Amino acid sequence: MTNMTEVPGAEVRFNEDGAPIIDAVTCGTCGRTWNDAAVSSMTPAPSGRCPFESEHVSVLGLLAGANFSDGDMIDTRELADAIEDLEETDADRLAVEALFKEISDFGGDDPAEGVQLIADSYFEQYARDLAEDCGQHDHNATWPQTCIDWEQAARELRMDYTSTIIDGRTYWYL
Image (cartoon, rainbow, N blue to C red; front, side):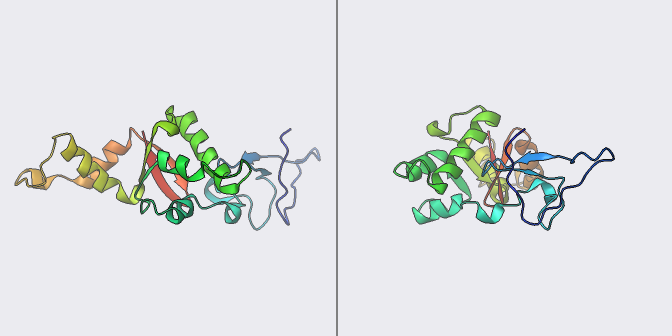
């Protein structure tokens, strides 16, 4: 069995045979595993959130401290540069490495080569910019191109992307 982190105040529940009910859940950010079947003020964790989120490192704070982007788009090479000189056990470094592992595992790309993370709140503008960059839309366009439903266009584009959560914000990447 996986080594589980104890959740303060959690009461283990038992099945009719008297065996403890175990629902082991592991956080993709901090790597902790806990028994989500144990009842406490933090578990079962709502919406699959980690009960230890308050202890997670702020990746966006790491970027802000290094005077990087505003968080609408993050280039993973910036994150790699920001953690380069940190100790192997530094919490910021571990958080970024966990994010990189997630991107590699689910997206198949190497974050060291640069993966663009697009904030959910910025994705509609990203879709507009991408369409213009690809020659599919002219920002000086007139009717009927001014009638494009960009919210729907962004939703359809987002279908090809994978999401991740960074500091409570959803980001999308290819």
